[in-house]
Structure formats: C-alpha cells, structure tokens
Image 1 (tube, rainbow, N blue to C red):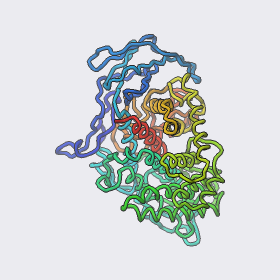
Image 2 (image 1 turned 90 degrees about the horizontal axis):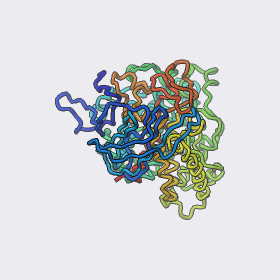
Image 3 (image 1 turned 180 degrees about the vertical axis):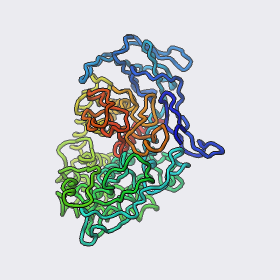
Image 4 (image 1 turned 45 degrees about the vertical axis):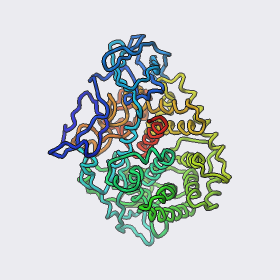
Length: 601
C-alpha cells in the first residue's frame, strides 16, 4: 500500500472516517481533507497555528529574524488585502538570543482561509468556528488505531487497516511476578488494551494515568464528548463512543490483577522491544511482570473513577461493580506493600528472562495513594478513604505526570466541586483551588516576554522528555481549570496559546499532531507507522517534542540544534523527541476538547 497517500508539500489533514468517504468499487477508504490547501509553500520563517484560529480569540504570528520585513499583510482567498500592520513587540529567545517579531492580527474575525505575507514569505492562515474540533476527534480516534488483540478494520481505519495481533490470551507469569497460587510459568489471558507508545507493550502505570486524564476531561465536557462520533466498532451502541474507546483499555487493565492476593502486575511485555515490524509479524513470548505499589494504586484509582462513570450505562453496570471490588483489593494490597517499587535492574539480576522494555518506575508512592484514596472515597463514600486522602494531600499543585499523579487527585476534587457533588463534605478543596490558581498565575507571568506568545516554552525546564505533553498540553489543561473557576478569559486565552504552540507556533515550525498542518510530523518513532508501507503516519498522535537531553543521540544524527526549544527532529529513530504515547495523547484530547467545548458552536 506504499504511496497510497501521496506526499504533496507535506500537507496532510485529518481523515474523515466512515461510509461517506468510501471510494466506490475497490472499497478503499481514502483521506478526506477537512481543510483545503491553496499553496504548496511551507514558510519556515512564519510561525503560526497551522490548524485554525477561533474568530473571536487572539491571533498571533511569530516572525523569524531571517525575515527583514517590518510590515505584514493578510490576504483573503481572492487575494484582497484585509489587514496590514507591524509587530506589536519583539521577543528574545532565552536559548539562542534570536530576536523575533510578534505580530497580532486578532482584529480579523471573519472565518475563512487567508494568506499571511511577510516580505517574500507566505503562510496559510485559517480562521473558523470549532477550530480545534478536528484535532480533538482525531486525537481520540488515535486510541482505536492503538488497539491490540483485534483487527483494525478498513471501514473504521481506512488505509490504516491491519490484521489482529497480540491477542494476549496466552501470557506467561514471569518469575518476578510469581505468587504461591500463580507460580512462574502460569499461563493467563490478558487481552484488549492499547499499545502504550511506539512499542507494542502495555503498562498499567501509564494506562491508569491515561484513563484518569481522559475520564476527567470527559466529566467536565460530558455534553461535548457524548456527541463525538469516532466511527469505531461500538459506535452503534447506546454508550458514547468516547467511553466505549476508554472501556477497551479498561477491559485489559482489570485482567492485570492477581486474583489471589489483589496485587497488580506492573506491565505486560515482551522481554525486549520488537523491531520496526507490523504487529502481526511479532512472535516474542509476552509476560506479566512484577507487581508494584504504583501499578496497584494507579489501577485502583482509574477503576474506581471508571466505576462511577460507567455505572450509568446498563451495558457496563456489571463491569462497574467488578471494578469497584477490584480497586479496593488493589488498594488494600498497596497498603500492605507501600514501598514495593518496580525494580527492573534488580529483577534482571535474579530472574529469567531479563526484561529490557519501558520501566515506568519511581520511588515514591504518596502521590498514588492520594489519587487512589480520592477516587475510592468519591466512589464508595467510605470514611477510611477520605482520611487517607487527607493524610496524603500534596502541599502544592503540580501538573500531573505518570510519575507524579497527585495533580490528578487535586483536579478530581476540583472537578467534583465544579459538578456540585461535594456539598457537605469537609475537604480542603478551596486550598487546592487556590494552589492551582497560583500555579496558573505564575504561568501567566511568562507570556508578555515569551518567544512564541505562550506560557510554555520559555524555560529550560519546559523541555524534558515528552515536553509537548505535560509541560505544554497539561499546563494548558490547568489553565482551563483556572478559567472554569474564575471565568477570567485571560486563562482560556493562555490555554489556547499553549495549543497554538503545539499546532505550529514554536521554534521548530512543526505542527506536532500527525495528520495536521502545513509542516507535518511524518516520521514518528512508532513501529506501525514505520512498517505499514504508507507514507503518512497514523493520524492524530502528538509527537513528544523538543528534548535537549537527546538521549538517543548515539542513533540520531539529525537534530538541528542543541538549543532547548529547537532540539527536535522528525526522525523515526528519535525516541527522545519523536515518539508517540497514550498519555501524551490523553492530554492532547483533554486540552483540545475543553477549549472547543468552551468556544465552539
């Protein structure tokens, strides 16, 4: 199927799935462009949101110092000048000292396709209602493309269809995971779930975190999410597609508990990463590996959270009841084993086979106890969980990451307060709100001098591994909470600015969501996209983003710079800057969906 989708100036846009996009005769589902493209030029010197600006919101372009022009114009689709102006300020990069011009054309509010002109450079600009809706939908649909243990069918995935693989109905209990009633070598069944990232393994810590982020976004944007038609196998049932997709992963997670003691296996994995081959060609034995405190608590939190939401749907009521019991057993195991942390290197010294895949390890569990106790209290109303949540409450708000999940607990208390479900409950939610607002106010202080008119991207610490996710999209979600709490539009504008950064207004000029933009990520570190013979990668995935750590530098020679915000390369070998991951996509879904539900029509 190579070259079925042609590369014309790297302009691809999100696919439209469904019967209306089916080509008669051969039955192939071709991509239907959601936006038209009028030019094949890719302006390297004009940095903009390449997907779309909301009519009434701030519209900013950033001009690189290679452009000497001091005045700029915007032309409509007929070539008529509709705006002209100069930069409102200059910005100095803290990393490279580049002096850029910041141009504000917010006065243009009429939806349409425009051309931004800076000297000899041009860049397409789109203004439209529901500007982020297509990204939100594609990012959620991407989870279907990550499903294991079932065929990804043409009628749902078009050219990205593939046969079933990794059925996981014969998974072996690893020596590190052995227990008296489930000794090493026991064969268990653990199907369903999503591939975690660019690899083919499944990890409870990251799956639990991903589910937590998605379901929190769902609860705050329920009416919006319920209308999301993802065109997946479950689309005809009486449950929102959003919840059906998350359930596919939950059905895997619940199988990862030892039924005899309640502990939860850390991951389901091959001993070594597979090569860059299609899933159906892989043949390594798959194992469940060591139980851990973090896995058990993330499992408990996400299943307890899911039980509250899914109990409203008859199709999933039995699952919801089972999930509560499983969550309580996992929490009880963690209380007995509060420091049983995953230790891959130690395991490899003692057990066979050695395991060399992703670790998702950390050496503290107070944050997981806080999140799990929070979710279990909100689901069961048992006072013991309430007291546990109080005892583990963090001193300040931090954007949640898979290794520091206390922010998920904070956000959940705020969620429930916003939903009016905490009446009469004496928990220090007001302090948590104040902590979150203090964090967001600090973010806001960076905007007036930022290189790309966003809270994100102005400090060295903004660019760890996966910087586009927690540091940018996660920060954006925190800003949407601040907006919801205060109704002060400045916070929503700042969240949109972080989204603009992800969609192209950044030092690299890439739109970091596959399938979107005029300068696209074409070679993500993802095995399926690399091996499927299709030029365009699977759409809707968020690339990790700039990472000056360059942990893959021994294999990657294409980094253009060591500067923090330019340390990104669209190279399939760059796992440090160009991988995809389910937790990163969860943040992308949450940010785009929340903004669009507040602004869309």
